[in-house]
Amino acid sequence: MRRSGLPESISRLIGELAKLPGIGEKNATRLAFHIFRSPKIYSENLAQAILETKTKVILCDTCFNFASESPCYICSNTDRGNSSICVVEEPLDQLAIEKSKEFSGRYHILHGVISPMDGVGPEDLRIKELITRLEQENIKEVIVATNPSVEGEATSLYLSKLIKPLGIEVSRIAYGVPMGGDIEYIDEITLGKAIRDRKFI
Amino acid sequence: MRRSGLPESISRLIGELAKLPGIGEKNATRLAFHIFRSPKIYSENLAQAILETKTKVILCDTCFNFASESPCYICSNTDRGNSSICVVEEPLDQLAIEKSKEFSGRYHILHGVISPMDGVGPEDLRIKELITRLEQENIKEVIVATNPSVEGEATSLYLSKLIKPLGIEVSRIAYGVPMGGDIEYIDEITLGKAIRDRKFI
Image 1 (spheres, chains in turn cyan, red):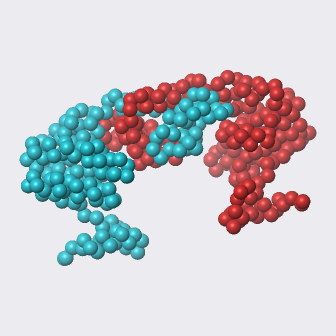
Image 2 (cartoon, rainbow over the protein chains, first blue to last red):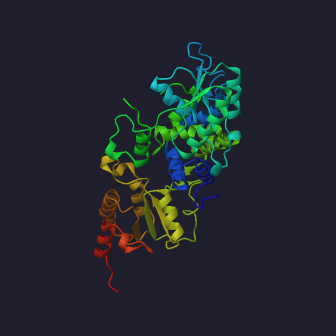
Image 3 (cartoon, each protein chain N blue to C red):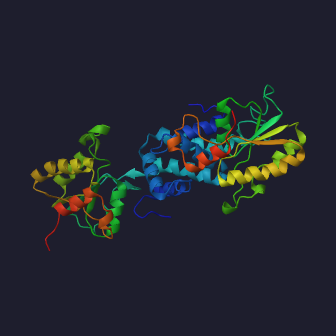
């Protein structure tokens, strides 16, 4: 699209930026202007980082996390437990769980959730590869840490039906009132979930 | 900043993206992941557009709008009136006014507004260059089309005080209820302005 009145180059940059998720035409224009006004070194660094991400970042052949080499530093770490796999939707989820320091096993990144509305079926995710791992590695438990969304729940259910027949335990992380949360301000769905999943003490 | 657990390249891309205005660390991460997952051709096009914007886009020496060559296509258009200059904050404002088809004179882009809070003074804007134009060209009216913000008003006032002594008329575009707007839903400041600036009919 040619933005009438704007120079060709900046118009093209707006077009490319507007293809990014969550970046509309207006926002893309603001960003393009900013890039134009930034020091040359910034645009060079940005362009280089974009190109390097495509050339230097790969997916780990085992867990499918972003990695510089395969197997990744987690899959190749022999100090970590190898009897449980934590399944997450995205690499960022893996990072978040790793930060909690509560899990020291292996990970498996699905790269999405089953979402028929968005045309994403099980075959679009790294589910087949997960099953292959479960058949080859000596895994005792799969912890499903998908998001508490309709799609996350559906994916969790789908995985559970697939994995349980293999004689492997499947668990789901707990969902409820977040620590430090104020019950007064917690939405009713979370509260409902927290009450249904209450633990006797 | 090294985002622990993420490959160096993607971490650096997140860092560069997060320097863009309105893009936080979280958003930058989402964008970086998207770029990683996009076809290689997209990242190449994006990187190239970024670099070309810095090398091929210039500012018109006369009006300081973005341009591929100087003078820009508006400043070099002899069909346009040359007795009035419309002063705007940003290139996008110029585009918007041009689209209205109500103005066929010249433009002058300030590249910002006077904003002491952000450390932007008159000397940071293209005001000196505007005055030079007014002294050299045969301008009869300057239409100030800065935004209806505190800074826009202050800049407008500043320009007016500077330009009037040159014997040139200074006007400000009208601010009020937008066409098609619903009075019920217009904020009280706009409505107040619309009432104060009412036109007898």
